[in-house]
Image (cartoon, rainbow, N blue to C red; front, side, top):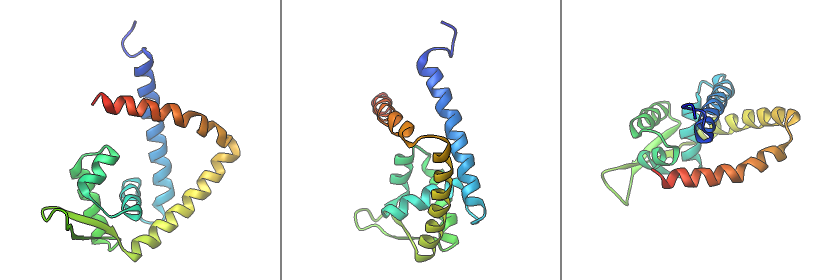
Length: 145
C-alpha cells in the first residue's frame, strides 16, 4: 500500500481539512466582533465552566502556552478574569466577565445564523449519522496516546 493511502491516514487528512474549514468559518463568524476562532474557543470554555488554562488546553488538545496566550489577551480586554484557585494555589482559574458573556452571546448568535444557512444545504441528520462513529474513533485515538 502506498504511504498515506490507508484508511486511517485518509481519515486524518479529511479531518485536518474539515478542521481548517471550520476554523476559517469561525474566523468569519468572529471577525466583525473583533475576535478570532481561538478566542472563541477559550471564551466558550470559560463561558461554560470556570477552568484553569491547563484544563482547557487538555480538553481542546492544544499546548498550554497557546491557551495561556489567548486567556491573557481576553483578560486584557476585560472579557475574562483570573481568580484564585482554591484547589491549587499555584494555578489560577479563568472565568468569564459580564463583558465576555455579551461578546460570547453575540458570537453564538452569529454561529446560529451560520448553522441555519448550512442546514438549508445539508440535512441535519447527516451530522447526527457521523457523530457516533466520530466519537468512537476519538475514544480509540485517545486510548492510543
